[in-house]
Structures are given as C-alpha cells and as structure tokens.
Length: 194
Image 1 (spheres, rainbow, N blue to C red):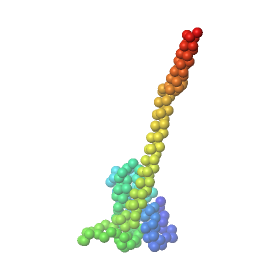
Image 2 (image 1 turned 180 degrees about the horizontal axis):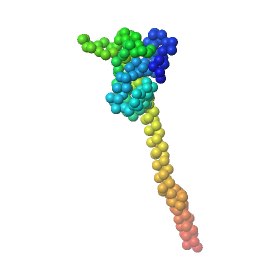
Image 3 (image 1 turned 180 degrees about the vertical axis):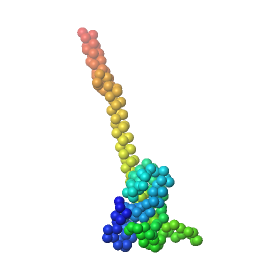
Image 4 (image 1 turned 90 degrees about the horizontal axis):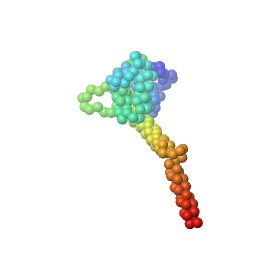
C-alpha cells in the first residue's frame, strides 16, 4: 500500500472519523505514520521480516498475528507492535493530527513525560484486535474438533476393517458360525432321534 493510499480526497474530519470507526484504516494509519518504529517493534519480537519491508508487508505481519488462533499472546504482540510514537510531521496523510491524538490519550500521571502512542488514542483498536483473534481462535478450535471427529470415525472404520475375517466383519462372522453350529446341532439331534 502506498503511503498516500488514503490521501485521495479525505478531509481531516473524515480521517478523524475513520480513526474512530474503521479498524483497518486505523491500523494502516499507524503503520503509514511511523513504519520504521513498527518494523523495529516487529524485529524486537523476533518475527521475521524481509529487508526494507513495505508498509504492506508490515501489515501482513500484523494480520497473520491476529489469524494465529494458537498464539495466546497474539493480541499483546499486536498491541506492542502498534505502540509507536506518533510523528506529526510525516510527509503523508497522517501528519497534523498530533493535537487530536493527544486529546484522545488517557490522562497521564502528574509530571510524567509521555510519548504519544497512537494506539492508545484510537478508540477500541485493541478490543477489535482481540475480537478478530478470538474469532480465528474459535475457527481453529472448530477445525480441531472436526478433525478429532473425523479421526475417531476413521479409527472405528479401521478397527472394523482389522477385525474382518474372510472379508466379513467379526461380529457377523461369529453370528454365522453360531447359526451354522446351531443348524448342525439341530440336524444332528433330529438324525439321532430316528
């Protein structure tokens, strides 16, 4: 995605509205504003990246984190990666929102110096990320349960196949033998009485 992908005709008010309502836009905004810090955070988590990754490649790392329903720390990693300082002078559509983002920040303790982290200013982004990850986790659980059912059925069929005698299921074979023995016994007893 080019750095100016969202610039096409959006007013600053529309950008503010999208930051508060559109998860995809907000994530891309953070990446487009400070891609080098995003790259640094990804690298610090030992997540592989190509040399000089594009903003799209950075986004793909974030998406794959949320799609990994097996990583219980995925949302924390996602949040850590996006917790970067906002650069008010970036030469793209993300510049000039410092005061707005600062107004959305939670109050800082007295005399604490803070770096504006966009993610804490964008309403609900971590919650949405958690919901997305949870959805993928539920899909993974459903797939595992489906696989377990299929494995159980396959096991039962294999067990049935292993116990066949002369190509006949063992229970049927035994029933036929018992029936034949019963018929032979009746014939034998009826011949004996004559």
